[in-house]
Length: 390
Image 1: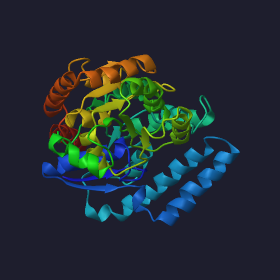
Image 2: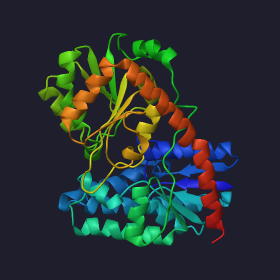
Image 3: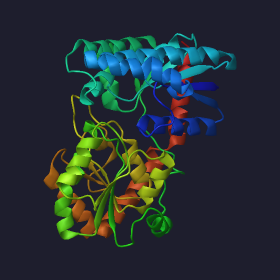
């Protein structure tokens, strides 16, 4: 098949959706399909700036939420134009990765399947882009319902989102849990010393890695809140964040308030291929997600990548993380927002590295058996074929 993947967001970018697209593309191509990606990044920068971002900024000054509606619709229109310009490539099917990409794709007349990665309206509220229960939030919910109803098939990245789609639009989707390239994210113990030297860490440092976009639902403040207690027992511990988002300034201020500037590193957004270095050099990975404005973590790609990389994982017991991690078998789960439990888990893994190694070994085995990108690509292929029969 000739497959087009579409999104109104940038591609590539630092984040789970972009990682999902890259990994799905690799899996589908390994199965012999041709796969292209069209995103807002394919629009000339000046056009995106003056048509989407500029007016959005101004409209948000008038009323919060007006800007995001303008921006998403403008992105939809620009993506729709891109798809039309590429129709000569005779794609068999489009896999849209968000609500407004779904509308742009359907308008082309090419059979469209949609992947739902989250709860668009609730996530906009959680991120502070729109006010809860506002007309703008309700409009985004209506757009979700319309997109799920009009696309040929809906794929969701976990069971909760499948239930959400059913509740919102009465549409029965297919849950295909997130996945990773198991050849790309794999244990690399032999590179640990080399990578630590490359990125400025010593062999004696005890590194906690937080590969999270800096947004409220990802609970990124909690590792910093827990870290002073960890440092009391392990003064050579380091906390490293990779990601950017609207919570950056809050996190930066918290680090300064706690006097942790020398122990906490905020890398910002880094290329996905570089994230692999930090998994390999880390001692423990933290995925501290929380419930926020009705939003739950889906099948976290960051957690899967940690497990695939053979690094002990501590995650909060919310959303899809409860499905991924079997507590005390292949990782540790702690209560969300519970700084005390997080402190204890962090200290426990530093005090018991053999236990951490055993958890990580079983986690890698689970990834190989259940979360391979090759197996997921085969499932996507079957959905595409069924959509073409409609």
